[in-house]
Length: 145
Length: 144
Image 1 (cartoon, rainbow over the protein chains, first blue to last red):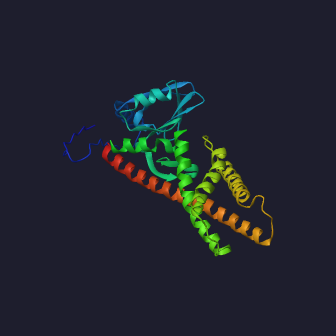
Image 2: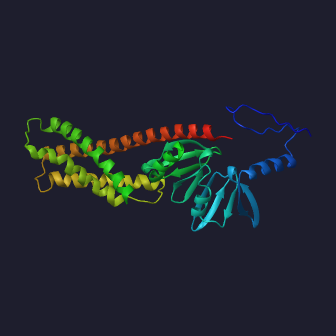
């Protein structure tokens, strides 16, 4: 397999491109490795532990003192508390949007008004999550930074 | 608590403005000849306060379902009508003219109630649009 590294201009976005005949297990492994290099957290599903790339997490929700990590299609549980994730992911693209949810800002497609002064954000996987009005100024501040 | 106060205050000031318009419209319709003293300026503020009472009672921090929310709003509207009609017509003798005026006031309360919610929704839509635009710019800056 040939490995090619191309220097690109400062004004262009850095990227990794894989040329392959089909996306098999090996390719998935390489992708996971690259994603995990950008940070990963532990999650449990069906009594099995997984390393979940931070960039793949859509949102983190706390329900009845339990913390759940939502990815595009799957949901994992974590032993960490929501406030721990908030501190851990403070420097990443995550923001608190309600008392019980931290969201990956990179996964939001659009925001629309919901009833009762709240907002709904639509994610890239089609899911909709509620934003409390209280957190809107904080989110706006975060988006500026 | 602070957010609840802010939310209710916003709704109060929109209500007061719309109540002013409603008083003007119903007054011109039912009693165009009536004149008032300076105390007339306080009435929209008081009616605004009265209509805020059900909002405070019905306020919920919980994430309500659409059905729960609509039910609460219907009760809130009903309470608004009862409170305002009692405040204006309570103790007065009911005749055809008072009944017609009460009906007019009730209709204007419904119109004000709906208008307040439409205005609040339009303001929220503007905020949502701004957020979506800021998010798109943020994602463009940070996409890797």
